[in-house]
Image (cartoon, rainbow, N blue to C red; front, side, top):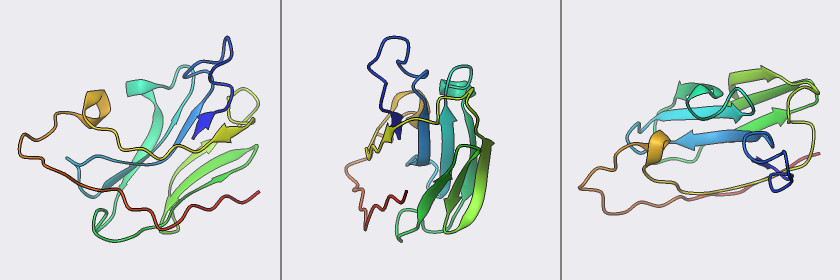
Length: 130
């Protein structure tokens, strides 16, 4: 998720905040990342954690964030694996929007295997509760 004010002066990334509920690298098949980006905690210095799950690429799993003014918790299959104390000093108490994307290569994704030909991202559903 990205802070909806990302295009306003003074709020460009990472000042707008970013909450990665789930990131998955093809070269780490069963490792799931949950990460928050904000000033002082972005790129390689982001506030995140990982967990390992079986069959990340072959079975559906439930990825979720429970986000309140005081805490952001990140889960996979109802198991908490990252929690951050939220406050007004962090950029997470304003509107955000969802992003679902497939990113390849780069600093986070790393080198793409030369034998790679294709893959797919399948999503069963997305729910947002307020």
